[in-house]
Image 1 (cartoon, rainbow, N blue to C red):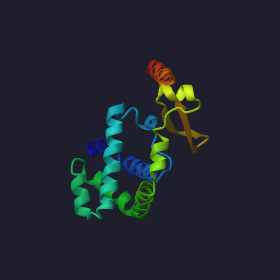
Image 2: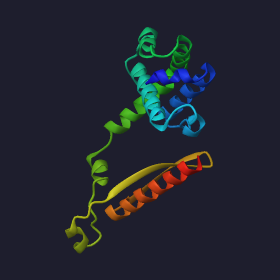
Image 3: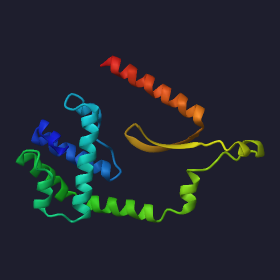
Length: 176
């Protein structure tokens, strides 16, 4: 879906590609609001995923410029070269981010995984109920600072959260 890049000017394409690399490296992601007039939410998500995958594959496989340009064949030559220039300029950053991610995954212990799949064990009575809990981790941006928030909730709390989020989406859509 990188063909969607052609809806941007080459300058904006460069900016977006840099922001996608920032996201890949654990920094601030591109904001959908900046591009809501250009793409639908579905197109936006597909484009982000496609660009991220392209950058990861190109760096992970040490792809040649020709291979990268082939992956960008659906967009114009100038857009493809813009994306390639971002990739080449930030290749080492992407490589480090991929290595860090791989290292953290490979160093995860069974205890880390088990922690996210635990049952409520606060008392004998509750533990006998085998109450499943969801451990939800969110990245929250406050004053341009990204912090991680983790919360644990049961099925009822999860349903309440989903209902609240659906209501918030309806309000946002009405404001447009």
